[in-house]
Image (cartoon, rainbow, N blue to C red; front, side, top):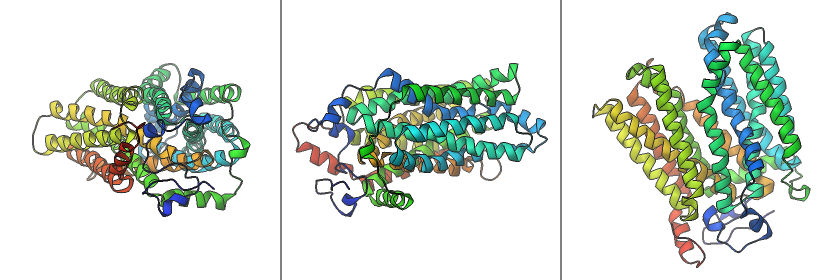
Length: 451
């Protein structure tokens, strides 16, 4: 059982299972602390091989979701199914990703990172094979749920490995690196899927996912070493996992960071799910123009993530970067609401506001994850990562239909969803994490960086 974190913010949450560091400290501040053997190893930064492997594992989720989307009409025709029912293949896949993180995160804390990861990749490959040969829609929906559940292993264990191997600025750089890889996946996946449909059927896209799952399983088996030593694993069963989860959820700084990331992801997914219909049906842009706009906004997220992890994290505390990102997100959300309800600027008003909003996610999402993971010990990192990811995907599933309430897409509703998510993220961070305390305490330490 870890000891309580120091500082005046100590309280009931200090005895949280898996808690390790001062809740008011940030990854950037932690990197300024006296070096430990683990900290010294972490300062070298992630190797390219590790980044490539874990980036591929994290990208498996977006590829699973987006690669087959161009083939949805063909699935409906081939299986003689209602197009609305075919959409359930996407919904159940997302629920599978959420459930899978709750499964594989705790398993990786108990048995190490490699065994659950390899088991998940094998199950993913088998589920993808079932998708290829599925003779009817119910079986395809079930296989998609299993596929999403198994594919979540790479997503949740990838973050846990980051906690095992790195800390402080090194962890932010690592998350920035794998985000660069995974951020390209949703941009390229529909394009690749559309090209695959030129030479094969929708079943061929699932065949490609089967081959990808098998390839990642082989690469992970040969190249990814165990990062959680046997002595650092927890030996409890399901009850111990529940106690760890409960302790983390009662820990106000961790809960605040989790909710900040969750609502930030809500803003991101509200845009992803609503922008296509809003831009094409409300503002009448062509599919090609929409693809260009979507790509530009995706580049904003990826570029800001890189700047955050490689430049800003070396100069400012994570709490300062979080406040800056949240402030920009709220400001962009306010502008978006105004240009869709008061000022009729059309695309000239909407597109820049969305671009800035998506760029702010490149600061909010990696910093909230890095700060949250820095608060837990390695034996609880998988469980903590599971809570972070599950909250994100559940929030994304809930906000997805909001921009089309009333039966038709609405730019104003999309703007309200995005702004509300940004405001809730800001409230969670300020109320539960109390960043001003971190700034006050860091000012008293000569080695810490002002934010």
